[in-house]
Length: 160
Image (cartoon, rainbow, N blue to C red; front, side, top):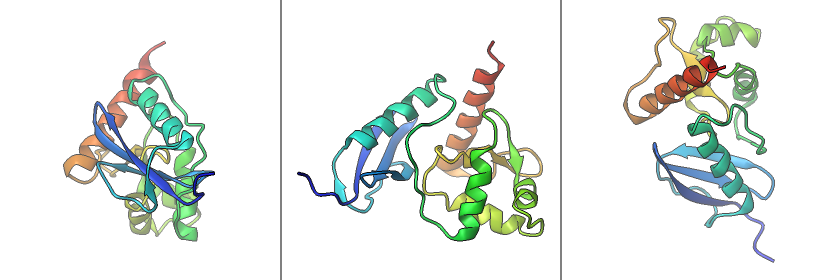
């Protein structure tokens, strides 16, 4: 029997490489780009399933994920990520709205930090968090990917 330790594998997508890390039971990391994650570099049934679901999502054919995700984070981060999992497909929220939803309205800056710390990109839809001006925060490849996810969701949600 193969070692039960963590694994990761890099998958190619139309948006560039995505690195997926997992234990035997849950996905622990989805990184936009190539990343050496903890564990052995090899695909598993779980990382393959996650990659398939991500490809279906990127093709506009999937709105929700069924793979188990277990992002590691503080209690505060976990509270933020639970709220984000409930943001409907194609919709957005601000950090202030998330802060209010977790019962800590003055913590919007900490919410922003929790959003940036999300280790399972797309599975916990941090791309649905926008600035108070309605724009995708940040710059670079990650911001472009978040914007691409939002555009994809808006187009798919508008279809009958």
